[in-house]
Length: 160
Ligand code: 9YT
Image 1 (spheres, protein in one colour):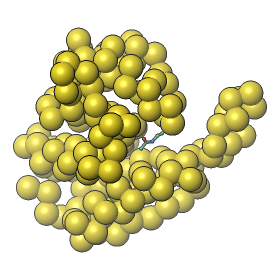
Image 2 (tube, protein in one colour; image 1 turned 90 degrees about the horizontal axis):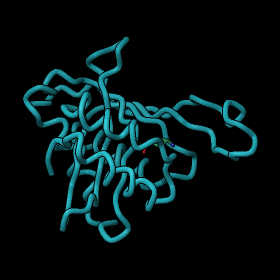
Image 3 (cartoon, helix red, strand yellow; image 1 turned 30 degrees about the vertical axis):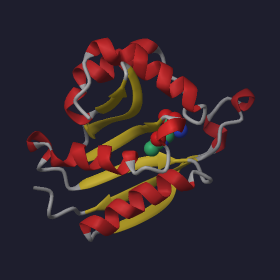
Image 4 (cartoon, helix red, strand yellow; image 1 turned 60 degrees about the vertical axis):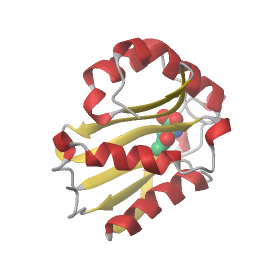
């Protein structure tokens, strides 16, 4: 489990495509995440393939808030706590020690992600909230996109 490099962008894109449940962005966007945002992203690889990836960035308007964009775990690795381990790894980095809040948007039926973030809140002994964020009408009708709910946890006080 390491910080990604720009050359990981393509394998990350393949992982996201295979999960089938996440919004697939351009390869270019994953290359940039793996480059410019590498301090707040993490990749888990096996036999040269990405089996886990978290993309995240500090919110420009609130730099102590880590906005987690996508959590991806390969089918073969599901149910083994990889998502939680990747989140812990991000927060444990020295350069991320000042992060106090973690946010993510999730679909209403994404129980795995919900469990992941609520588990983290419990582990850190902090509050969590779930509020409406991006309604389905924000997305093109043809994409039949679910609404995105904002899950927020914090303040995290023991992030050392
Ligand atoms: C936490 C997470 O994976 N959220 C997904 C947001 C959105 N639906 C996407 O980028 O896939």
